[in-house]
Image (cartoon, rainbow, N blue to C red; front, side, top):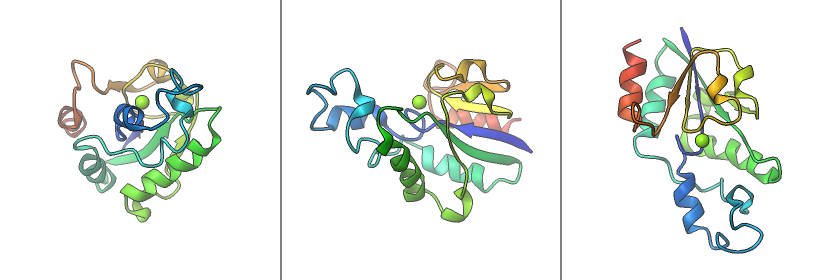
Amino acid sequence: MKRVYIDLDGVLADFEKGRKNHPLGNQTPYKGRPDRLPGLFKDLEPIKGSIGAVNKLLNNPNFDVYFLSTAPWDNPDAWTHKRLWIANHFDEKLIRKRLILCHHKNFLKGDFLIDDRKWNGAQDFEGEWIEFGGQQFPDWESVMNRLESF
Ligand SMILES: [Mg+2]
């Protein structure tokens, strides 16, 4: 069984779109600090193909799936909203106690990390870092091809 960690923002949840559409996005003190926008993380739209792909992984006995996200330290509500976001989009039975919020992703033991950015330990992850949105893995289709070929 392969353990897979999946980032939320920019991988499952469309942070960029939420940031652009947020009514306070261009106001002080949120300009340049979108991670502090009130309620931003609660209602983010899913990224294309992400929900179906993750449901496939969650239902595949070859994979042990966890959500691994960094929640902004200065926006404590975001920690709750991330928990609610996955509950909104996935079957409770499949995701219960599978959310890890952490600033040190390299501390986690596993085979794959799907993450769009190298920060918060992603680039030092001990397994394979699948750089979502990069040249090799631009979308969920390419990620699933990689995982299912393993
Ligand atoms: Mg991300």
